[in-house]
Structure formats: structure tokens, C-alpha cells
Image (tube, rainbow, N blue to C red; front, side):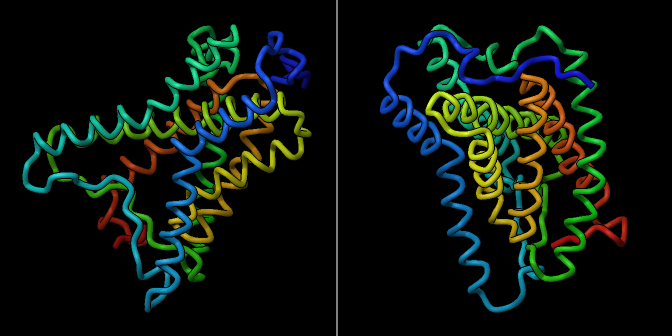
Length: 267
């Protein structure tokens, strides 16, 4: 199959007016305010888990927890606040790209191909989702992963809308920053395609390390696939769609199935 775009290589960008040092410092600051900091936090969490008595699978990593137990309206306010503020780095990336005469559209994050993005995303999610569940169950059984609890929200009317919004927020943040923006900057800084792929994939794995070795390895592999697809398609839109569908499946699926099927581990 012929690639649709040559890929977001440095030669396709507008004329660069920023120095290499500025681009490097800007990239480090964006990561320090977002997923780079999450990677450090996940490493500290992982160290705490492996040095705690007992095995990893006997410990739990909860993704969407109540922020104000017993106070649903306050809890909802905190949930929406967390989702909104987590997207600030995406707004910062959009601002920085506009400064150089580009924008999020240059990363393929726009509304020009909604059905194509959704279709491709659904296909990617179908392949990764089934293999991802199997991988998680195996590595947890082997003791390399914590028990992942995708949601622990109260049974209130806003539970499922918040889980869907959380899935979309995770997806937009990760794919825009770790794939589109980071690869663009690394290309502009002269990194080779292989080095850029490795950097993006390792970063993705790092901020999932709080789940255990399985979370790190599994997400690093997903990162390799996503970088390859981004280079091929020149768009993060399908990746955002795929990631959103994967997280909705994990969050909502767990809420519906936890305690009702024997194969799904619970805390």
C-alpha cells in the first residue's frame, strides 16, 4: 500500500526561525509540565511497589478514583477540573506551533478527515485491544504487573460520561504530545527516525511504569506501532481515535464486568 504522506519530516515544516537551543529547551519544558513528569512519578511509584512486601499482582493501580467520596457533586467538580487541566499542555503545544506559523493541523489533529480517522482508529484499537488484554493477564499472572483497576468511581449518573471524557483526555494529551509534537521537535533537532521512534516509545512506556513491568513494555510496544502509523499517515487523528476507543473499552468495560466474570482481576 502506498503511503498517503511522506510523513512529518523536518523538510515538510515551515522555515525554522527558532534556534536549536530554544527548540530543545521548549521541548524539555513541555515534557516537564506533562508526560515527562508523569514518567518520573511513575518510576517513583514503581520503586515503592517493588520494595513493598508482597508481590506486584497483590497490589493495585487505580486509574479513575473518586476525588471526594460521599460527596458526588464535589467529586464531579474535581473530576472535570482534573480532565480540563490535564489538557493545558496540549493548548501550550498549539500555541508554540502557531508561533512558528504552524498549528495542530500540521500534526494531523483537526476535523478535516473525521470518518477516515475514526475508521483507522477503530481498526487499530481492535487489533491492539485484544492482544493488550491477553498480554496484561499473562504478565500479571507471572507477577510482573500490578492489578490495574481502571475505575473506582461511585455509582452516580455522571460515572460513565466522566470515564469517556477521561479516555478522550488521556488520548489527546498522549498522542499530541508524545507522538505529533515530540517527533516534530526531534526531527527539527536532527534526530534520526530510529532515535525519535525509540525516544517516543520509551517515554510512553515510562509513564505507565506505575502499573509494573508489563505496563512499561506493553505501552512501549504500542508506542512503536503508533509512531510507525504516524509516519505513514502523517496524522495523529487516527491515533487519538484508537487510544480513546481503547481507554473507553478499558474504563467502561471494567465498570460493567468487574466482579461478574472470573477472568478479570479485581483489587
